Length: 268
Image (cartoon, rainbow, N blue to C red; front, side, top):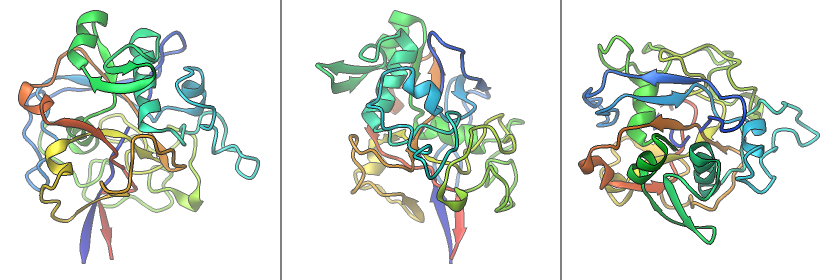
């Protein structure tokens, strides 16, 4: 039986430090992938080429110091490994830090350290652009939409052929992360959208609240992932936008856990 695995959730960028690399995702107004319904984005945006690293995240003061998981004495991956043990709220604060230099000010509205709402529009008006977690459509397009606009590939490497298990760009080998950007570059200039760690995303509320998941598994699943959870497998990347998503799309957005885990398809 063939099962599609959707790998969700995301982050990287820098404010006041060396700017992380971003890649531009164009072809605005593309249609969604007919097999999944994801990937349609009506504007050009940028997405970080890699997941946010330990060094980048810990310099922001958005977390609580647990993010150096991959250097615990038994594993010494280095500060260029993806930050993990990052909760959704901490990832949101990092996005604010990139936007304004302050973890409490940006696209994610906090009051007294408590998350209140998401407002990309106000952040763009105030700062000229905003950094945020990718929506599922933004993430999916960056991973699977072909740069020549000819359609979607099954894997982020631009083909329908699974990458080798020995490719550092695929999976999470040996239960350990690796330094970001050390695998093969993917079709839109990104790295590790087929592996390394899971990534936080903004997920459309309609699917989360009972839509037909068909053959998608949202891992670890809508029912057992919470915004305050810190897991060793969770990291993120970011998008940079200066255009507000269409109202129809924005009205559906809710921040929940999505996990981009390994690949789109697993055979069992």
